[in-house]
Image 1 (cartoon, one colour):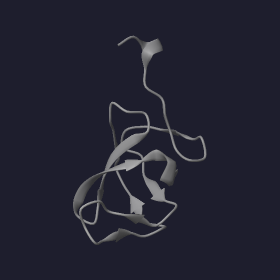
Image 2 (tube, helix red, strand yellow; image 1 turned 120 degrees about the vertical axis):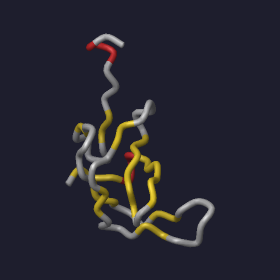
Image 3 (cartoon, one colour; image 1 turned 60 degrees about the vertical axis):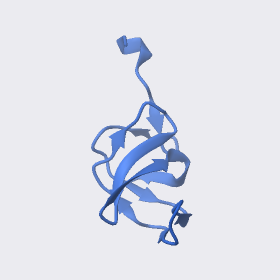
Image 4 (cartoon, helix red, strand yellow; image 1 turned 30 degrees about the vertical axis):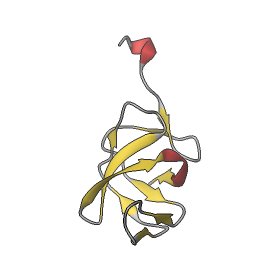
Length: 75
């Protein structure tokens, strides 16, 4: 990958997200395969970028989850 081919990941407001940033969930999200819900305002610290510009990984309530960037805001 060249410097020009870098993946740019943006949150719901257009802010650029980088590895290790903290984000806030802007909408209650149902967790697939579970009855739990990630509440609006939940802070996800130390995110990791994935190969997809629309998704990031983060630890929520002691488990690692992949979250859509459209539901996140940079903290």
